[in-house]
Length: 400
Image 1 (tube, rainbow, N blue to C red):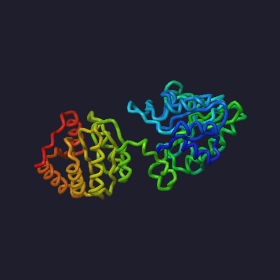
Image 2 (tube, one colour; image 1 turned 45 degrees about the vertical axis):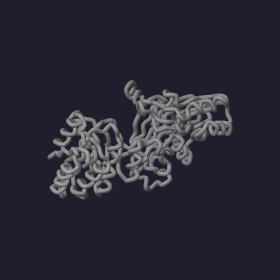
Image 3 (tube, rainbow, N blue to C red; image 1 turned 120 degrees about the vertical axis):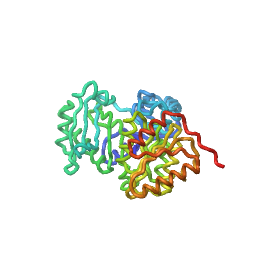
Image 4 (cartoon, helix red, strand yellow; image 1 turned 60 degrees about the vertical axis):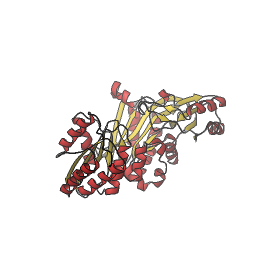
């Protein structure tokens, strides 16, 4: 789950992490009220969307008079912000963050991640903050420094000071940097975050260290431990399919391809997308119905895929262990009957009650006029799905 900048900064502030004074607004009048309450000589207006690269796209403005606060807020609210991360469809700006401007002397990149390879946390720092870290890694990789953090021992002052020296901070800032890094790590761990990125972390003209920006991603599987974080979810930032999937407890991620995938098990879902790619196709989504899926859950998953206009073929790849193949087949037929579509359905079933499941699909396809193609193996089914995605859509027979 992604947090907005103002939400992440609210959490950081509760841990004693220095962040600029500011407030969130959904109207230009609210933005003006926030700016007047902050006082000061300059203010920064920042679009609140789940995407990076806002500054280059016009989503960050610095103003020095109250009239400009109102005018720029009016322009920004409701605008479609298009960045590298949003794609051409962009994101609609519904809220903005108004902050008092900071006197910036130096910009630093700092982030915390979960490193699955080492089964530890990782802290990454660079003296080249304020720019895309991918570009730094490409053009000047020696400017990026990494340290592993044991989840058992946690973040130490030593690690913080060590990183501060590597990025060239003077001796009078070593302890300040280490203190901020330690507090950031505490917030990162306590909220089961997958990523906490501060870009930039700045040294001010007064010699203080301040988090000027904050991006935070929390593990969806841990949200049951953080009800207050779950309440922060912004459904307006999600695809309609993702919202519907969350209602029915389905794991769904939208992608850009034209082959919709319905699979049971995250590992099998990843393998399904890989094998589609290997045959030259493009998956339209990641959708895991879970090991204990029933008829209703399968039906809803099928409906979610059908709402994606890009999908030309639906690939159902089920290994029946806990879930029975005949129940999957019944769910597929019910969904196809409730939401008529001209799209092909390719099914690979294996495991518990597979013979019964295949017969249900064969009989249903014959009586309902649905294009259902079965595959003996996952590779066979994937290849058929890719070939059908390149062909003309199947025309479903009208009901008599």
